Length: 152
Ligand SMILES: C[S@@+](CC[C@H](N)C(=O)[O-])C[C@H]1O[C@@H](n2cnc3c(N)ncnc32)[C@H](O)[C@@H]1O
Image 1 (cartoon, rainbow, N blue to C red):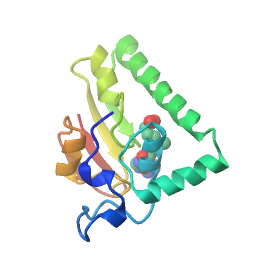
Image 2: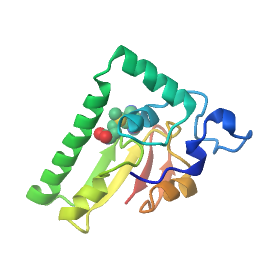
Image 3: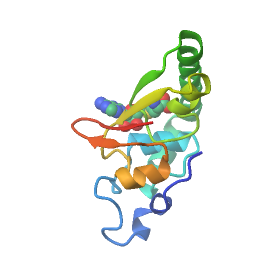
Image 4: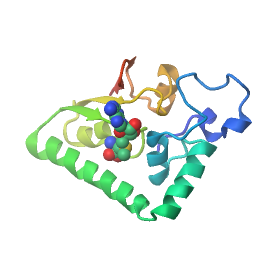
């Protein structure tokens, strides 16, 4: 698991005003952070934890689904890189960095493989310098409507 940013370990109530980058919503849960929690990520806030607890009470199977989805992603990228020889990937709706990110799987089989990661700005992705602390291989981050992207 990627080392979480220090500022993301705290709850919004712990943070002095203005301590969080403006593009990170801390007053509401985001899909990327909630999904990351299902995979064991610590990159979340109290609002995300409350939301995930409610989701688990309503639908306990959601953790299994998230983990099986992630395993499917691993198998799909492995097949494309190892068996088909694909070395360029567009990960649309990548979520937050976690274990077995697409470039990490692809580069096991295609060391030169490159990935463009795209997700919605403001759903939980940090600003560029902070993002590179979470994801050291990120080379860039572009913000535009409706997506932001980083490349590895
Ligand atoms: C369930 S997570 C999947 C994460 C990862 N791809 C995986 O399979 O483990 C879905 C992600 O899609 C993102 N997403 C949803 N709509 C999107 C859009 N229109 N453009 C970019 N990302 C989007 C969400 O923010 C979220 O991070």
